[in-house]
Image (cartoon, rainbow, N blue to C red):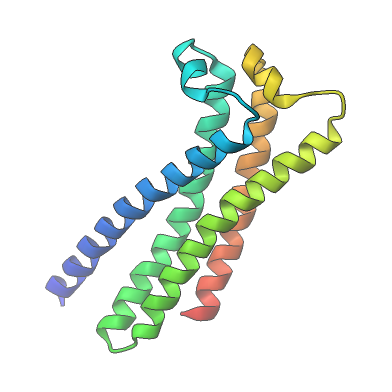
Length: 160
């Protein structure tokens, strides 16, 4: 049984690495599309701490959601080894859905925050290096991820 557990652990590690890299790429690419013309790489090269804070919060938020989904993958693998392949398929679908939801809901939360802070262009403030605005945005992004994580765990519990 120890060999089976080691094999499952290895599979889980490989899946986690692949999904983490893909999810982080998706998150960064999505953020690049919604920043209204900001060149994030150029801002980071200039040492813009505000942009770095927001990008780090997006990556952290995605990691929170992916981590909860990886646990479901582990359960799915164990169930698949016992003959229940549906659990593994459901876990993968749940994880992909979680990543999509994390990115979409973070974008929506930032959009709502933009509406609530009329007269404040958050992305222009980020370009100026406004750390206070960056911290506000980071808080919204991370709080959203924590809430989404609960939903991802709930989906896993229902499906597996």
